[in-house]
Amino acid sequence: MTASSASVVVTGLGIAAPTGLGTRDYWAATRSGKNGIGRITRFDPTSYPSKLAGEVPGFVAEEHLPSRLMPQTDRMTRLALVAADWALADAGIDPKDLPSYDMGVVTASSSGGFEFGQMELQRLWSQGSQFVSAYQSFAWFYAVNSGQISIRNGMKGPSGVIVSDEAGGLDAVAHGRRLIRKGTPLIVSGAVDASICPWGWVAQQAAGRMSTGHEPTRAYLPFDAEAAGYVPGEGGAILIMESAESARSRDVRVYGEIAGYGSTFDPRPGSGREPGLRKAIELALADARVDAGDIDVVFADAAGVPELDRTEAEAIGAVFGEGGVPVTAPKTMTGRLYSGAAPLDVATALLSMEEGLIPPTVHITPDAAYGLDLVCAQPRTAQVRTALVLARGYGGFNSALVVRAAG
Image (spheres, rainbow, N blue to C red):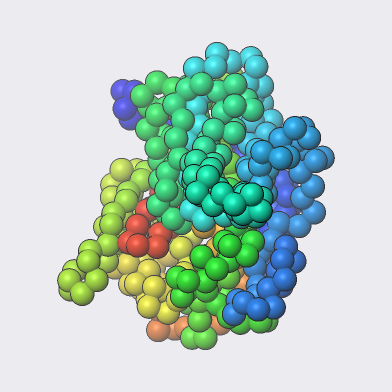
């Protein structure tokens, strides 16, 4: 096997989600269909059309991070740093034991940076300096995702941030695989996003896709006849990735392999050309060298917007046939976590393989017109060896990732 085709595996998971802090709590909540969506508590949402979100409960950054980091960071950064600590510990890695240039960080960001930017704007407006505030906000936006994790852990290998909205989480994992195949022994990847603050909320509201429903269990309903937008959330997952050979030499637990990846960009609206999601799926399957019949479950992007749900259902149906593969969207419990959503789905797929259980898509009554075999209400016992994770970003990004069980 050449370096360019070497198997890349996941050996550590760090999860921070509206349904649980840490892998064990998150999986227990997910397999049981626990709801993590509720009325916003981080600010008063009364004057906004959308008032619900998936907030990470019980997170006290000071219990996990040194006090010196508090003034330099916001909630998104703190969640990411702690998730990275958990993932490294799960993989049995102490960064101090490894050469600094053998470790890299590739994460994704989408809506993050707003809370820090808002703090800076408020601070600097009082000093009459809006320009500096904006500059600092954008600089922070790009530095935080990988830079803070790199600095905290002394990682001097390849570092970067992928920005392709919700598709970015898969793009980051795929780029991490690419870097390992090029010779970097260990990559920290995935994403954590968080922008539940007034400035971030206005920016998200402007896209026109957020649900304005007030009932937590009926506001976000992908593939349901009553779908009317999505509910945002915060959190995500950080993954530790290394070559299969490295994992064997360390004799550590392997969750699974990042087996295939494909990405496309949608054509110009009104062009009459087919959206790019189907092609992304086909590219990922080809990269993984698997057929459609080898996929045991699809983790859907699940936009919750009827026309986008229809596009996704058509792409899945075109590749797998109507009702040809189980489909699930556990993000109905958490809300859409922007760049953090897809890495969390990857982690969930790996946990599904471990237990032989497909988690449910909660709260919805599936619309038969979509032609999907949706796993609803209750989890489904199944042998899960190979899973497909889908993600789409605002503006036309499409990504698909094939994850395969270890062994």
